[in-house]
Amino acid sequence: MKSPANYYRQRLSELEKSMTNHQYRLRWLSVLRLLVFLALFPDIFFAIPANLWLGIVLTIITVSAFLFLVKIHNRQTTRLRHIQALVKINEQEIESLNYKFDMFYPGIEFIDTTHPYSFDMDLFGEGSLFQSINRTTTCRGREHLAILISQETLDADTIYLRQASVQELVLMPKLIQDFRAAGSMNAESEGDLIVLNEWINQPSYYLKRKGWLQAIVLLPAITLLSILLAVFIPFFRIFPLTLFLSQLIVVGIRLSHTSREHAKICKRLEALKKYQSLLKIIEEENYNSKELIGLNKIIKQGNTSAAHAIQKLATIVAAFDNRLNILAAIFLEGFLLWDIQCMVRLERWKTIQGRYFNKWIDVIARFDALVSLSTFAFNHKHLSYPLITDSKILDAKNMGHILIPHNERICNDFRIVKEGDFMLITGANMAGKSTFLRTVATNMILAMAGAPVCAEEFIFRPMALFSSMRTSDSLKKHESYFYAELRRLKEMLNRLQTGERLFIILDEILKGTNSFDKQKGSHAALQKILGLNGTGIIATHDLDLVAIQEEYPERIQNMCFEIEIDQAKISFDYKLREGVTTKMNALLLMRQMGIIGS
Image (cartoon, rainbow, N blue to C red):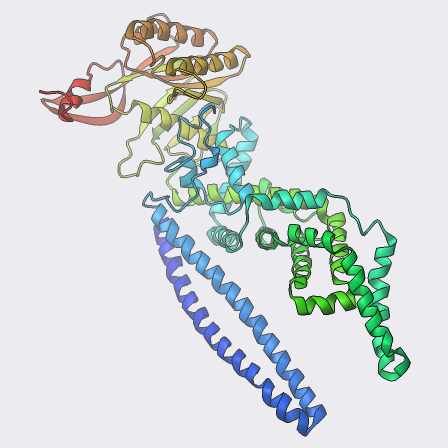
């Protein structure tokens, strides 16, 4: 099997050749289109005067050929844009394999300092887990991916279903890239879905009034009939103009309403084109995994496929846009009551298809998030898929942090067998304690999202996570650092008291007080957690705290990260060991940085 890097390079080479060919073809199509257009002039100015019927036939043929070439040119232009989007995707993925993720959206709006763990674990923001995984192309897809990694999935069946979806999509890299390319070709804003849902939910006006439904049929029909009669009977020549002006007046009566509706719906044309192309890609594939089969069924409900229905809506919206051309609008409104016709067609669409719209958008969002997880899995083929059990809390072999480059990553084994057990980790500054805490949490987050994890083997029980690593004070809330830390601990204890099973990750309990208070308070807090059957890890510099193992020998395990000190040189191996650390390095590090003298 090709490595991800080789796949992307080969794909990029093929796409660049295809892009060159399409650009060459488009240049010749443009020249041919211009020549055909210029051929209209001799047809009109020479052929028609010489032979009327021959000239008309030649003009029709030339116009038809020109319109055909315009259609082909537009199709080729769209295809070229798609290839260019694919080129960009493969370039980005080559960069991402070197741990460069700046080109991907970081999900800053999802940063929440009050979340049980996301802020501590750098789930969102620049350099975050979300940014490294995120390949979504829709607003809802981005939100769904954020939910997958910030709201734990505790049901084993759901996790396994998602794993199966990811594993199937990993085998479809072209489908994944086509989906991403299609999503990037049309713009979408946060407000598009809000406005579209407001429009779908507002009551119909024209469909409830038979007079309007009759008018859009009878008035254009009578107007066109009067034109035919006027050709042969002079008496009827006044009627076409009268009916033409009458239709303009009728349209004018509803002009303010139709203009508001046009402004509301027609600004969403780009978003509709985006949804249509994404749904089409989802629909056209056959799937084996249960979740993907279910998504495909949802978008094939009703009288037609979702892609076809959205395309029909986009066609109506594009037709409605013709009113912006003043010359075209005068004829369309005067002969066909165009505004009212379009409004009726829009109301009919939402009456028939509107109830399915949010389900279709949800399918796009879920598929969009799965594409991100699948791209992550494709790029890290060495990762393993976790196994779920009730017999252990967590048993991981060679586990590392996915955001650390593989050539720098140090992996460790980690094991907590039963609920209520705790691991206390000691170590010098910079020895790797905090990174290890984030490694455990990040892999649990990936596991519950249905993604592969950065471990050779990962067996776990899905549990809600709660951490306290990065508590900060707040001037706005008049809240000190110490009070904020206590509030965080209180929230955790309250959840434990309700009987909730938590996997707890703490980095230094009670950092915001003096050493004596810290020692006594940390001991009391840990006793309280153990009394409520809490499970997890604590990293600490407090060597007195580890003595609590003597009180709970069956539940507490002391582990450490050691350092090697050779005179003024410190070396770190970042390997987790049994026992309690015996070496600290604060003074030596301060000397090395010139903060204090030697």
